[in-house]
Image 1: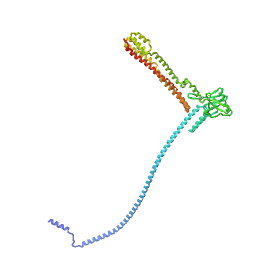
Image 2: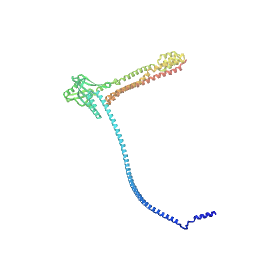
Image 3: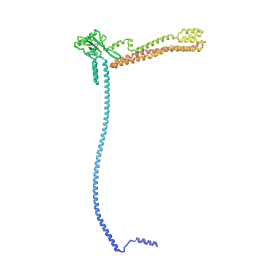
Image 4: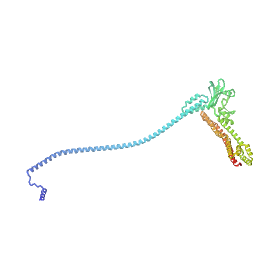
Length: 504
C-alpha cells in the first residue's frame, strides 16, 4: 500500500502544472513583473548605450594606441635596422682597425728589432771607439816614451804635437811626420852641455855638432840596462873633422845642405857605410856613417869564432861550461879507473882454480894478490878465508862485494845529474834571453823581424850548448854504467864458480 502511495506521489510530481484558472492577484503580480522587467530593460538599455559609447571611445583609443605602438615598433625597427647597419659598419671598421693593429704590431716589432740592431751597432761603435781611444792612448804613451828616450831632436815640440792627436787619421799623420823627419838631413841650433851649437843630423842615425869654439862632437848611442842613452863624444882633429867642416862652412856661406837621403844614397867606402850630405858641383862632403849605430860593429866583434859564440850566450854559458868541465873530469877519472881495474876475470879464474886444485895454494893466493881489480881482490879474500870454512868464505866474498860496489859506481850518479841539469840551464838562459829580447822589442817596437830573429837566435845559444853537453854526457853515463855492471856481474859469477870449484 505504501508502494502504491509512493507510486501515486511519483506520478503527481512528474505530471506538468496545468493551471485551471488565473487569479487577479497572480495577474497583478505578473503585470508588475512585466513592468519591472521593462523598466529594468529600459534602464539597462540606457546604461548600455552609454557603455557602448564609452566602449567605442575605448576602442578608438585602443586603436590609436595600437597604431601608435605599431608606429613606434616600425620606428624602433627602423632604428634597430639603422643600428644594425651601424654595428655592421663598426664591425668592418673594427676588423680594419684590427688589421691595421696587426700591421702596426709587425712594424713595431720590426722597429724594435731595428732599434736593438741600432743599439747593438752603437754599442759596438762605442766599444770600437773606446778601443781606438785606448789604442791611441797606449800608442801615444809608447811613442812619447820613445821620443823622450830617443834621438835628441825637438823632443818637447814632437811630444806636444803627439798630444794633439785625437783620431786615427791624426795618428797616422803624426807617424808620417816622424817618418819624414827620419828621412831628412837638417841643420839646426841646439843647446849641448849648456852651450849653443849647430847640429847637423841625417835622419835618426847620425848627428854631429859644432860648438862656438869650433870643436866637433858625434852623437853616440849606447844600450844600458835595456835603455838607450845618447851621448855627445868630442872628435879629435883629423880627416873626419875636415869633412865635417865642409858642411858647416856651407851653412855659414848661406847654403843649407838639407836633402832627403834614400837607401841608394849609401855607398860602401872602406868597408863602411858613407853618405854624401852636400855637393854643389865644387865641394863635396862624404861622411863615413854606420847606419846601425854600432850594432853591426858589435855583432862583428862578437861573432868571430867559438869565443864570440860563447859570449853571445850570456852568463849562463859559464855555468854550463863548468858542468861540462866537471863531467869531463869525472869521465876521465872513471875511464882511468876502469882501465886499471878491468881484467879478464874468466882467465884469472881458470888459473887460480887450476893452481888451487893442483895443491899450489900459496901460488894461487899470491897470483890474486898481485893482480889488480875487484875480482882478484874478491878471490884473494875467498882463498884466505877458505881454511875457516865455507860459510866464512862466503861471508868474505859478500863483504868484498859490498866494499867494491861503491867504488865501481863512484861519480856515475853525479854524471847523470849533471847531464840532466845541463839542458835545464840552457833553457834557463834561453828564457832569460827571450825576456831581454822582448823588453827591447817593447821599447823599440817589433817592426824589424830581423832584429827579433837575431835576438831569439842568440837566446837559443844556451839551449844549444846545454844539449851539446847533455847528449855526450848521457852516452858516457850509459857506457860507464855498463862497465860497472859488467865488473859486478863478473864478481858474482866468479864468486859462485869459485865456491863450487875449490877442492878441500
